[in-house]
Each structure stands twice: as structure tokens, then as C-alpha cells.
Image (cartoon, rainbow, N blue to C red; front, side, top):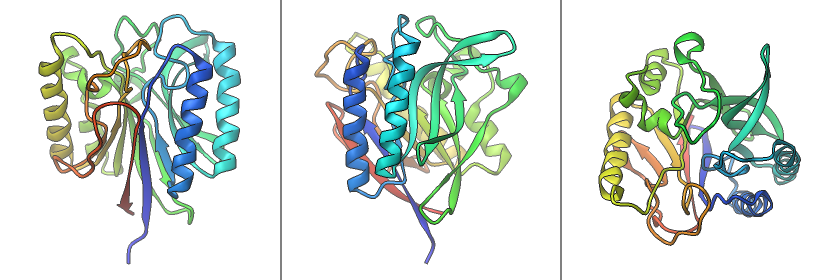
Length: 260
């Protein structure tokens, strides 16, 4: 009998208020712990909020709190947040997925295909390729993951850049794609974008044979309350088929057991 790793997603509200986001993420971690989840995926900007004006010091303190809480609950995280990281040019803003186990950071993915709203430095795929990280279960057995943030899945074709899923497939070392997104919604493009997102996920998962775990913010991109449908479905898609099904409104959790 093969070993498994349980990876979960949290479709949660991403607000402008960091204190609210801390509470929301802790609730998601509690649910993950109760369901014996190895790693929990959160939406883009879930801790900081997905806003141009964010306070690094406030987010830094919040991140420490979330790190300690996830450690106490024995839940690994694939945490979406805006962040600053040191470079040879000084500190630069990044849009990240931060990978944690036992409260310790073991890798980061920086968004490559940014939009004007991001106000961050993009990751240079052509120069630095993609990063691959092992997600391991309680026994230390794992699966290699690649992270994609929002337009890294949706927008790279628009911009004519390298396709991250194609690069991941060609490495022959990637077993799962972690996708944190936060798309616009509540406008006259909703139906078109919904179809685009759904087909894009199905096509790339089928073409690459790489399962995708994707989670979206449940309210408006910039943190305003919203009761409508998310911009894309949150869940797990394998070989072009959704293997989970959660409502497209409000806070929702799901998990899936992957063979490793």
C-alpha cells in the first residue's frame, strides 16, 4: 500500500485588515489540524491582504504569529502573502507563496507574471528558472511541488513568457502544482473569465499530468465584502478533472490524499 500526503486548501476572505487575516488563517489551521492535514494552501496575499499599501512591520509580526501557531498545530503551510526579501540591491517587495513545515520556512515562490496592482518585483523565470520544493508527510515521505501565484497560471500566455507548468513537466521532478490566486470578480467579465480559468486549469493539468491544488480569495480582490462567486474554482484538479467540489461562495475547506 502506497504512502499518502494530505494537502488541503482554504478558500477564505482576504481582507485589508491583517488582524482579521490572522484570525481567518488560524481558523483554517485549526480545521486542517482536526483533519490531519500535512499542508494547507491559502490564497494569494492571504496574510498581508492583496493591496498596494501594506505595512511590512505589521505583516512581519503577523507572520511570526502564524508560524508559531502552525507549529503548535503540526500543520505545514503554503502561505500566500506579500513580503519583502533582501537582495544585493536592498529589500524588495515580493508576492510570495511561503512553504513551512513545523513552523520553519523551507522555501519561497515569487510571483513571475505580476500586474500593475502588485507593486512588487517579479521573479525572472528566464534567468532563474523555477523553484521546486519537497512537501513531506509525517513519515518524511514527500512529493515535489512547484508554486504558481495567480497570473503565473492564468497570464503567462498573454505576456508571451515561458509556461511554468511546461517547465515543471520538462523537469520530470514535479509531482504537484500549488496555485494561490486572487482574481477580480463582480464585473461584466465574470462569465468569460470563469470559463477561461476553468479551461486553463483543465488543459494544463491534462497536458502536464501534474495535479493542481488551487485556492481563491472568497471576497473582492482588494478586500471588500462580496457574496458572489469566486473568480475561479478552489479545489484539486487531476488530468483535466475536478476531484473535489466546494461551493464557490464564502469560506470553504477541502483536502485530497495524494499517493507518494
